Length: 177
Image (cartoon, rainbow, N blue to C red; front, side, top):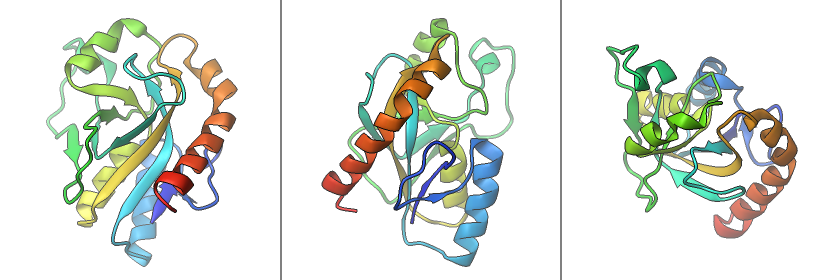
């Protein structure tokens, strides 16, 4: 099963599950309950913390859910904030962070990089969480649309159409889907 956030990130072979942590978890849970897949692939955009350039393609099976206050030790969580999908080997072990908020401060990049986190996507942590709950191997294929900084939204809006075209081409050619 191939899924994407939807809205601006629609691909003809992917089912939209919603934007952000909550929508994506609710809609994906419903999908896998009624049509359990053998494998779950999330495809979408990613903002980079500087390690990746515009339109780079990233594969991952690891996601975190870290809020900025956690990086500054102004918050903590009693729940696990890192998840890895089992049953899938990917050479690039970049962790993709998920939050309902977009990072707009470049000064936090080194803190994310120190944790092995290369960028952010709002839904991926939810996708891996749902997959883990249902014992479904999962992964993600992302295309960088912007650098996480003060102009992240404007860059995303400027680049997402071309990014989705490139991502669609990549998935068809490289992954044979």
